[in-house]
Image 1 (cartoon, rainbow, N blue to C red):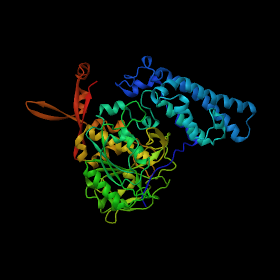
Image 2: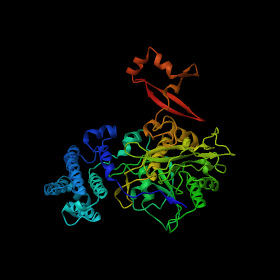
Image 3: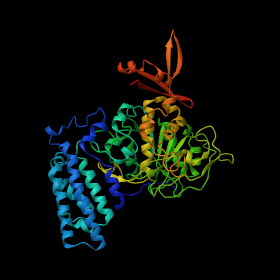
Image 4: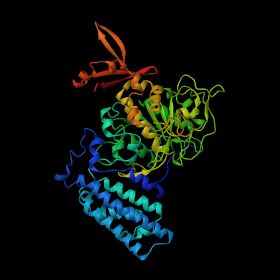
Length: 524
């Protein structure tokens, strides 16, 4: 009953406009997004034929995006049977212009990277994939609305891959992540992420991060590679950026040649990757028809090392609300998170499973016990992350967009790796780490923890910051004696302005369960 929760690339027509409005590749936004890093350092546009003029990319997409938007309206007329001959002629002219403009602007960069012409290396393979005849885009008029939208998104993504810097994707803004944040926090260096998923293949960047590989080799698809790329892909100017590119992957494939597995095999995979050093494990798999299967208790029972790591589990893509309670005895005390998906408007995805009011039952009761992972409402373990039209590795050296809770889960896993890289001792406190993720989430839906969104939306930036600045403490030392102080003492000090002018800061501490995090807080 195990299956990977993977949906195909189906960016429906009605969702594309919202998706498109969130993408902004304009040059003016790059410096803020990258922080102190300059992504153009190796490829200054003025001096290199290998990338297009960076300052003109925004203008290019503004012009051609407008052409495409107008074309969408003309297509709608064709679909409704109200298009005139002039409408059809205008549509053909628009599509021809998009292709011609793309060849002129991106052609040198495509040739520099691929060796062939724009047509042979980029245009023709994409036309062939979508059944577009010849060298003209006119046959696009025969495609269905969702295929048209998918074609243009792939055109957009493919060309931006030749820009000389990694692509900015909509999920980054939704989840408040940037590569500048990753570099400040240490890139996840020193962390091993466990991945129990389909065999990794076809992406040298991802494979370079693998330090352990176990399980079968008889079944493979793009699923595992796509998931891994969101966590560890290098920031190298070639499309995908992982949240924790300095982390390693301990991998286990539980699937046989028929794409089947068992819960005991999943348990073996958990033991294998945790034994290989994983402190957080991504599990984008489960049982169809449930957001959280009772068999997870069985899998964790068979994994003797389960209590040593934090588990991130995809909620599944049945579009249902769980009503089945989950006996939680064998795995009592094992910390885990369940991740659903939201769309570009932060609304729960139509396909995403939801926790409902289902409970983890311990000794016949639903009540939450003191230890996280030891029973209580499933919604207390639940949060959401972007999971629609997510750009990821296609397992063949390129990129594609995928939808599903399988794509939302690794965004949470990568965030945990970033936490454990910045504060290495959090590897030994998986329950506290889970609490950081949940308590830093942005509330969605009904106020508080609710049966649809759980704790709410993953907020990567907030997870790296204090959960509550008012709870921070610092220490003053006099004559060898340290004295705990609250941050209110700093706020009320008459010296604060002078300290700020001198660039002073304090080392402040936050207590979470049985551990702490430290922060350098500028007095400015």
